[in-house]
Length: 75
Image 1 (spheres, rainbow, N blue to C red):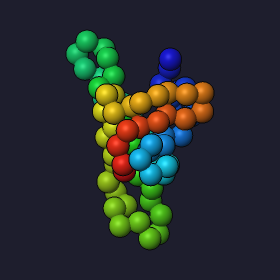
Image 2 (cartoon, rainbow, N blue to C red):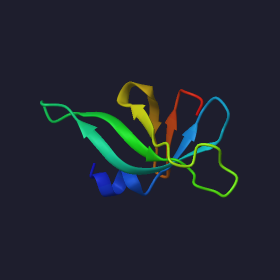
Image 3 (spheres, one colour):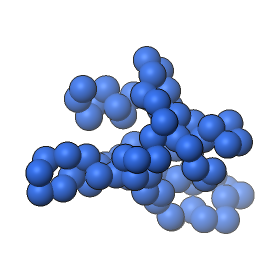
């Protein structure tokens, strides 16, 4: 799977059903495996954490589907 394919998917928290954000980058270890996804947080007018990007570790991903990525953690 290509990064561009991952970036087109919505990331949804399984604990609260919220859209976590969009993938803007990945962290790759020295073996070439993805360690984590960097998610751009929502930057709405009323957001309290406007400039904080979220890191989702690969082991927090429950399922990668056709349109969404489901994560185990609440964000």
